[in-house]
Amino acid sequence: MADVKDMIMNGQTALGIEFGSTNIKAVLIDEEGTVLATGSHGWENSLIDGIWTYSQEEILAGLKSCYSAMRQDVEKKYGVTPVTYGAMGISAMMHGYIALDKDGKLLSPFQTWRNSNTQQAADELTELFNFNIPLRWTIAHLYQCILDQEEHLKDTVFVTTLDSYVHYLLTGEKNTGVGDASGIFPIDSSTNDYDQGMVDKFDALIAKYNYPWKLRDVLPKVLVAGEKAGTLTEEGAKLLDETGTLQAGIPMAPSEGDAGTGMVATNSCAERTGNVSAGTSTFAMLVCEKPLKKMYREIDMVTTPTGYPVAMSHANNGTSDLNAWVKLFGEFAELAGFPMDPGKLYGLLYENSLKGDKDCGGLLSYGYYSGEGITHLNEGRPLFARQPDSNFNLANFMRAHLYSSLGAVKLGLDILLKDEKVKVDRIMGHGGLFKTKGVAQRYLSAAVHAPVSVLETAGEGGPWGMAILALFLNKKEEGESLEDFLDKKIFANMASETLEADAADIEGFEKFTKRYSDCIPAEKAAIETLKD
Image (cartoon, rainbow, N blue to C red; front, side, top):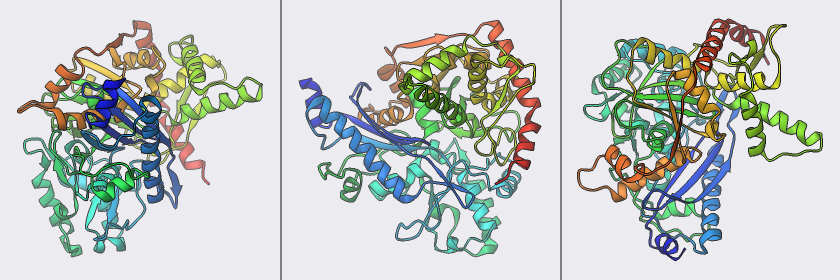
């Protein structure tokens, strides 16, 4: 205990803070990556005037609340108050659109990754670049604003993502990590910077609008893991710590998107590694040895935090609908006089799903709260359906929703694993879906036809990954790569559990996937007919 107190007071620690879709979480680690303390703040996006958003007030209040909870956890466990850290970093859900003026003022509501109002822009840019530009990418949002002749563009000096914005508030620096940047604009992995040829094409495309800026003027500078991205300013320290005890001057790692921190958290940054992050959105990332044979609108090409090319199957919709059903069962339990701890409730329902039919007994679910790029739908309607003779019981009901939380992302994975024959030596699972041991892990294994490993840190996920990136900034040796740092210093002795689905599980998931794919017109009909 005395050693830990000394480490905390001497700043021999690293702090990661990640803005997820439903939770902002801080994780404090020691120099070996061991979690010392955590803090969190729950929040939810709002649909305002057709835009999924979080207000600036919610962003700032969530940052303070999350940090305060972590600080209080340190004080409770160790009896000391941290005043500095060896390094720290910010991560967040990727993509979206934040536009600032010269004074740092928000010029329009923050548009999250969940928005799919950019179809025209994404289509035109994909054709121009011959490179898939998903609807949620920052450049798609920017170009859609241009097409719509948004008034704020003439005053815009900085266009960025949530993690880069919070980093800017804390440091005054306009930069971001290459993994996050790869969801802003296509990256050239040979330079670890925005693809200059595509930058030139974009500038030529918008020249007729006569804005007082070109693309590189407004986008954040691109940095790779291990580079210093600035230091915590006096203003930033006050913004973060409402008690005023936190000192300025802490080195800041490049901010990252949740895809990048997920790769770090699962040691999936090297070629032929892959991971699946399952939460509010669900995405699978495979680090490629070579380019894909062709472009797919269902597949995003992004990068690791050090710039390796990554093929991503990204589903906008993951566990939101699943969580809503679990909450409903919780309400019933309370009504019946048996209120239940959420963790226990999730465990009971998830584990009971293992008793269900391998193909979910003919049940079908689309947890589409928003548009889904992989299935080419720009809006969503949560939908549960069954035939009159389906085997409708609780186990199959939960199993169908668990399968569905991986349904869209599996369609993209099938392209990579079956059509492109991408080689993967290991697949790691992480995120809230994997907290109940052996359930979602088994279903993911059935989806990918391969063993899936879950680390003991799976529940910490991205915030822990961001803390590791901050630690890498502070502790890396001369010439040491992030991949070697992770292999030899962080994960060398870390426990993990590996599980492989049997043939019946695989066959059942394939049957469910065919039903899921064949019945997408039913979801489309729901979108067309279920209106406000």
